[in-house]
Length: 197
Image (cartoon, rainbow, N blue to C red; front, side, top):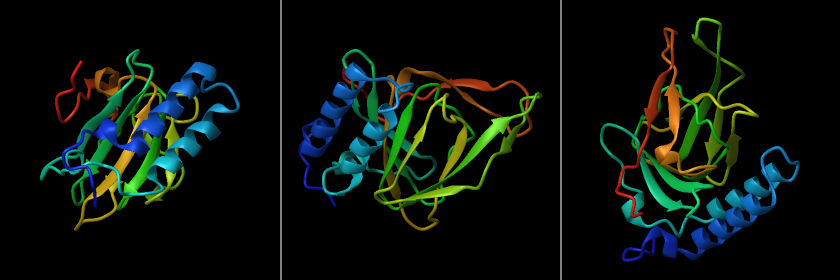
């Protein structure tokens, strides 16, 4: 579905426009200001409104686990943009992000279940699962809800979403929350491909 076989992700005009919008956003606002979330959501909705810009090289699934491909990291690490590629039936563990994030569904669909943890660290579901279809956008952050589990809706096809985070997410120390409770496990996700620095 892509026309950028020889180009890098950052050469895609749609991604350049999105990165410019994020640069302006982080220079003029933050997540505690009223305009932040609407501007972030609008920029992400514009990015995922068309599925003709993501290079094939960053939309390749893995047979065993989801892939997180780096599309852009801000020079000051104020934000990053990644593609998440979900093979059939793949899902994340229950995890957090520790920074703001926006998720835009590019193709296929994913379902997210929010969680909180009790006094013993045991995660429990909060609210109903919500499904993102192509063109839909959702947000996460420690200020609005940051713990969830995400799965590909489909057992027979690949889904792809595009995420923006308020840091270089591949280098952020985050947490996985065991279903049985107890202390969360710290992890750093890295990326599915090397990132030039």
